[in-house]
Image (cartoon, rainbow, N blue to C red; front, side, top):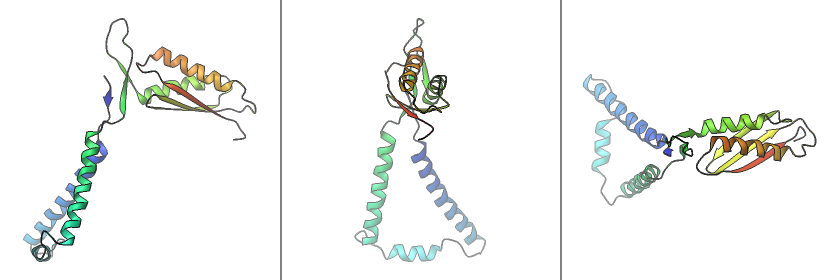
Length: 176
């Protein structure tokens, strides 16, 4: 049930580069057909390409750069992304359900913000870790860190993700 993020950034970059190349060639062809000077000088490109060989340093350097770029894009496509939907423990109906990271972060942020003495709370969920930063007007926060940790742990117990999370709480006072 773990839904992984899409690889939108590598796909978007490749699509944008291909679109730019297609627009450049298409506009240049249209300019050449209408008798205007094209943005891409086809005769000059043909002259340069005719003078290159497979063992030319420019061709080898371009091949290496494109090969490394291709391997990087292939690696980005094959490695799994961060889970965007985290599975929850099945309830009495045994239906598979999940919660998005953003929803989980918001629920935990509300739980941390409801603790007495907390002005603001920020919660991030990364992997199996929950990072909470709370701000308090108190000069001596005392047991505030444990109170926030208990509130977040109680909300996690209510939500019931399948994988337990470690909770890290940072308390910032007015003097920080």
